[in-house]
Amino acid sequence: MQVKGPERLLSETGVLISDTTWRHVLAINSSVEIREKALKAAGYAAKLAAYILTQTGASTASRAKLLKGLAKACSDARRLFCLVRWVKYFDDFAAAAKEVTPLRELLLAEASLSCVVDAMQDVVTFDRLGLLGWVPAWFERVADELDVVLAVSSTAAAWLKLRALESKSVGGGATPKARQQKLQLLKYACDVCKTADAAGIERYGPGKPLAFVGAILSSYLSARKQALKLAPKEKG
Image (cartoon, rainbow, N blue to C red; front, top):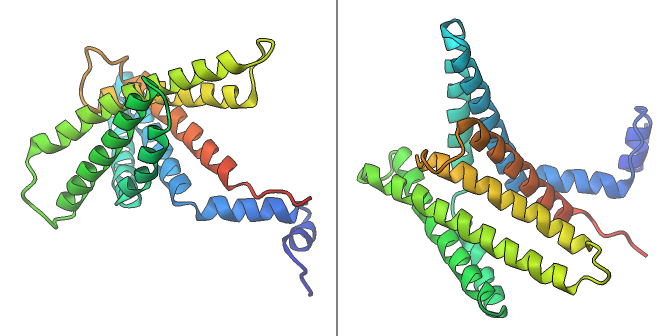
């Protein structure tokens, strides 16, 4: 059987898909960031299910334990995807320098904290793999607390960007960029919930269920943004 391409191949199985869409699917499948976000969503979904089962009684304890183990496995796998991720933030420093105050300072803080937090988490990962063995317990706690500060600064920067876009809109209508920025603001707000719970700041956090749901939603929004970036440009 002669196959002329993805469109011919899939149409013969009863599924119609264009060559452009097929290239997009392959690009998404090859994206490390999307795989990492999928693992994050799966891990927090398992945490949420385990939390719900834990509240229902002792009869579901074994299933809750199984789900907690699944969540930990997803978390450990994610760490490998995130290794040396901090290098991607170097370009953000140049982009931040072009902005005006106070957005410039917030973006510089965001880029700096992103590098520091990810580098610290790399150290924790290497320690868990048994490659270091000297990292103290407080080191990861400090990284988690800095992650909260990062989420708050990212939320503030996203809000300022949204205000700037809305001030430029004509007729008061929301532009596509403004709508996208609103989703980005929602994503960072979800990150605040998630990081506050991870850092153990429970008196300021919204509670575990909301933190878990926020982490799942944040993962979806990040994966969606990356998928849109990977979409091939139509010719003509």
